[in-house]
View 1 (cartoon, rainbow over the protein chains, first blue to last red):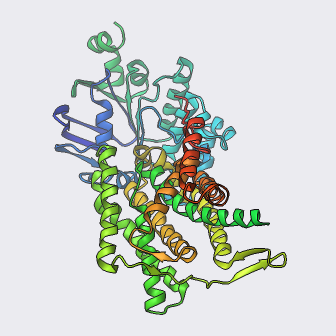
View 2: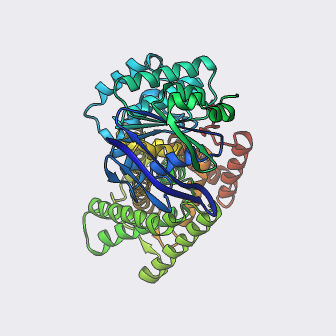
Length: 235
Length: 293
């Protein structure tokens, strides 16, 4: 069953045609990755799905319901969470408060249980729960941003460049966590420039170039495709 | 003893500035705009309270509650129709609009209530506590003002730090985009901030006019500007900063009036502001934003 269906959306920034009629879907339990170079329109796609930008034509459906014209906070209530590019944790709030904000749509009913789950997934966050988020390292902030999104009990988790600016060892750690989340049944849409890492854990992938989807296939197919290797994996 | 009397008057005046400054600083924190119409909301609150008490002979506290209700809605309406359409506009456009709203409120008040000064009845009478054989006299309104300010500060601090809505306000003030991705309704949160700030303005209006009983359509303008100064003094965007800035401004103003010259007191106040901003550009408790990326 398709959790997310994007059909032929066009998105403009003023007169710039950023997304040119792309379509794709994410099925339940899948990790799907959108890869492509800087400026290909990957983040624009995610922000359109989250309702921060609006497509001029085309539609986005989530769990069979169209998301057109819904405000971003209503989309989160439906169960669609995004971990934004650059993490964007609330730097002056504590780690725990950041997680509480993640649970904003859930009220207070399950908050203790969900906090325990996130702290079990990211023990580092538990150690630092009373620290302000601005004092965390980049890797810890990424964990916090992911934990924060999980607090909303998402039915689809969208991750925008989780590896950006992290040391290789931390990138591996973050991808291990994403793979673990997938094993527990999470449905994930992953946007990455690090195509090698993204394709190695993804069920399927779409390659974007200047606002269009140019190739699609399973993670394995794309990893071994000569075109993709040449363009994104250094030959 | 006379010094102590001045000091207490200063704290009382400063408490009013602090309550007004809270409105400026909260709105700045979340909407990143200077709401220069805030001072005139105080005036509207004072008029509502005045008519409720002097014309309809209601209990002063019912008058105060009415004023708070009217100002809360006024704040929400101002935000909805004047500022919300400019959410994406350059900050200069928003600033000019705020000044426009300020004139609109003053001139509407002039039409409705005329320019004749009204003598505001104190909301708790004109009595005073006499201490030290009458050497130290603290009027009831002075005491009430200080207590009101402390209570407001305590409640607001708890609200901002402990409640879900308060935390959502802090999240919005840091990063509206990220707050939206948490499922926070940013527009509703901004409305709430205007509502709280304007409700507090009504309290400030009633307290101000109880202490200084001349009520005119321009009554809110100068205290508004001074409270804005207090907010900048303490660090705009910071709630404890508004409190500290307000109190310090009140004390400096009263001391300047008492020991230097009542004509020069405003000049002294603004000179202090310049000195503080030269030494600490973010204000006394303002945060220099530092983040790891």
